View 1 (cartoon, rainbow, N blue to C red):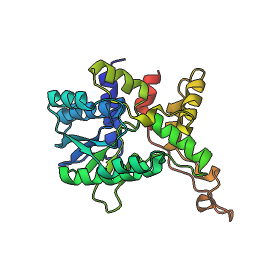
View 2 (view 1 turned 60 degrees about the vertical axis):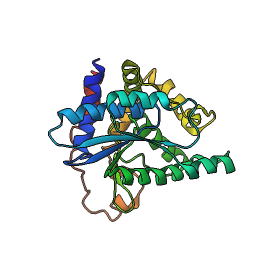
View 3 (view 1 turned 90 degrees about the vertical axis):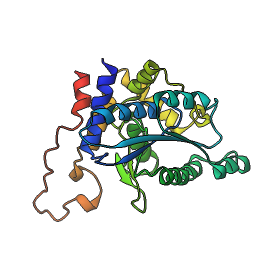
View 4 (view 1 turned 45 degrees about the vertical axis):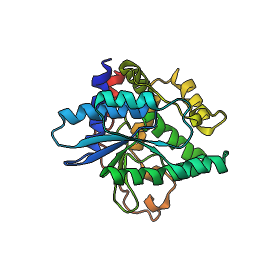
Amino acid sequence: MDLEKTLLRKVGEAIRRFKMIREGDRVAVALSGGKDSATLLEALLLLQKRAPIEFSVCAFTVEQGKFLRPIEPLGEYLRERGVAWTYFRDAPSLKLLEDQPEHGCDLCSRYRRRAVYEIAHKLGANVIAFGHTADDFCEALLRNTMFTGRLSALPAVTFSRAHEYRLIRPLVFVTEEITRAYAESRGVPLVPCGCSQRTGTVRRSLRGLFASLEHEYPHLKENILSAMGNLETGRLLDTRYLDLDGGEEQKPAPPPELFRVLAEDAE
């Protein structure tokens, strides 16, 4: 497999299908220090040179006091690549860590979201790109179904509350197998977060479940992703989409060639 070609095709397909990036956009990539966001940045920098539209790319990292290694190597790598990078130490997050060291992910995420919008405003960005992968989408679907009673995953594209920013996840078709291999091939210095080392979490349990099932069903994630774009609402239990009075059944339109980019690699 040509890693770069595969990566660019999948990211390009996501951007095209969901209209993620448009003429004149300034895209700020949220670098977490991990392999996924680093791969996303590299892909957008490459696509920026080839795309038929003009858009700019910058990057930022929010320091919340949980990095397990110094951040400097990442900064040096980005400077060598000529990437405009902002390193932001979020004082409220650092105080939260000091005052409530056992705080949960939801609270941490809320603080990070506020910081992300503040940074994007300073950078003049109207698009914020996150490095969630196909694995994250599949895990979110199962997590919400099993533990919250909602049939939902992650949005490929959404907007901030005031519609100031378009939030995009261009790695929706890209598995972590690809991001891991690509980040290694580029020699990206990774800076892990302490949260990624936690054990006994729902996320780790689901990852273990997927790893076990994929030995026997190697295309499991591709099928789950395809299902997210191919709903049969008449076979679910949400009465908003059911014909309970016996009228003519509403037949959904045939789905487009969903996730062709994934299927091609499976051949």
